[in-house]
Image: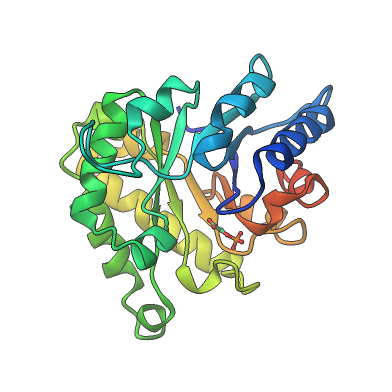
Length: 251
Ligand code: PEP
């Protein structure tokens, strides 16, 4: 079923102690509140177990920001999907533009990561989006379609139904420049149509498609009011309760 989701992507921020404190503060802030979306914290790997213990039993969930494309073996520094799942985390961000740009993650590598995640019962939050030059030359639809096609469209309908998509125009991430509400809705509707063409209308309608890119307390309500925007993947604004909570409450 399609869910409203607000997921925080902490990126390379917060020591273990700082992360634990933030998770506790957020849990306290959400206690007793009638929240209309799932709230997910995507922390660095080393925080996962501790944060899972804090949020267990609450509405909050935990996710990683990456996992290996291999199961095990001589891959120094890697963390497998099974290891992520063993912490209690239920989600994993895959295909974030920073991983694509700085760590050479291709659509083919991401296809393997998605498989490893699903085999280990993790829900991928799969990021797609165009860079500025592609937007300015009108290639955004083609780019996004290729990313989805090459990494996800060999999945069975059942497996695809487990995926959460996050449209993140790269030019809007961490730049303070948000896609307009109309740009977000247009792309989300396009994405849903591609999914419908491949897997049928029911699967498309059941897929949560999040928006990411400088979302904040001031623009979340308008972005989330679009029929095809089912929530947000939030970077900078997820690092403080004061800025994250109003986004959660925008639903
Ligand atoms: C992100 O990293 O996924 C993101 C959307 O970052 P920000 O909200 O800071 O633009």
